Image (tube, rainbow, N blue to C red):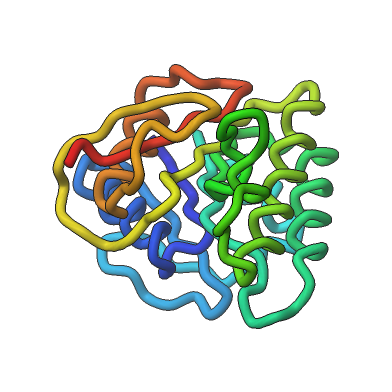
Length: 201
């Protein structure tokens, strides 16, 4: 399978890239600077360049977007706008978007609105809530969005459990998260919807 990974040098994207390469997939590792990634074809590109995205998708089976909004205090709107342009362009490949946990349902509301949700992460969480709504409202697009557990951090593989719109655990390692993403690419079970992942232990 030909897989393009946007954000291939980030915390999640790097693990997805390595998991895909380990299974023998052909990976194009996209980052803003085009950093070398062993075993992959490195490419410099930005998610806001819709034309470049569409061109890469035309020669791929799937594109993984593992890029969070600006976490340096800048606005989240550019990321929302970038996804809206992608939706309108309808890339010719499967699109798997790594979203946030804030859009997961907890009780009668969303995690982002629950007491104790960190203020620093609210702009990102609200942006991905909007992005998920936009994908759900789209047509003619082969998409899936995956949300991690409330806590995601580097760690060993323990195996994972899946859910849809509510958390199925408190945390997930990036290794388990990446495995779930590549498993979904290889054997699609959540086309046109969101799923979530938690580590077993």
